[in-house]
Image (tube, rainbow, N blue to C red):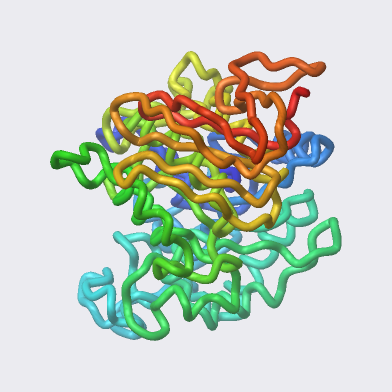
Length: 434
């Protein structure tokens, strides 16, 4: 999943702080790929490189609104809030009082369908997505991305577009270069009645897993009183649809995203190993389609990603401002573990009633997670065949050997394992050494 690649607001020093905040890319100016991340040719090259490596690319699509400030873009386009040269004019937006009932044009009541879909979200110029002109313009942008090899979209602020308009835009889209329908993950936070509920959008795509992330945060972090400091993950034995989440095939599951890590509603990289083991649980449990988030370090919630003086984002360097959670050994290897176990059912659940859990996925993989502040040792039924396995959280298999610790599984799948504080141990059939 890549950040919005279209041209966007470039917030200048003359406007005062923050200068070049991360959210500039969520205020489009036009649909040329002349963004703070690069240009059109660079985007096409990136997608081609990813596809050649077997990696699909999904784009964060901002199609509900345009800007709410500024007058120049990264691509050098001069604009005003309701006038974007060659694309939109005043008539292509919702306004008070003809469309929006609030005098300032903003949403006052997020449970009111008319306001949510026809008023401005935090003063961002709200596109008239019921018009054929706007629908055609947005579809042309998305179809261009599909022609470059993109496989689908995260739709920003999908709740504010509304299901009807979103369906009309989706109906105009081509198939991917692989001949499939584009994948859609829709930003529709929980809350709101009827047509504003996430369930109302299930026909148009998957939903972003805000409910998933909230339950993960509650289990791993929320309970801070003794005797269970730092959370109690044993409650996760009942999880997924059984714990009230959306149908598994309709959820893009995540532990954190760019909004939630800043508003404190979920875990984040600032939670250190707690965030890491929560991500490993997400990849192990099997609910939904998991999305691993990678961020940059920030102090102020508006901070820019690592960039030059003009706001153009610099190359990812995990030693220079980028956190790179996706490259942590345990997280990266759990992606392979997740793919290896496939749809095998959870079995051999074990816990200590406080903060140690373990389970297998059929006979293909096994994981133990310790959310406590001290190491725990226990004998587990792993469900795996006897043998010596590489602990893929702390090492990788190469040429028949493991770069980290190994675990011996004895007769009947039993293994004595010590799991360090705020850590995991994971094995799978692909990591069996002998």
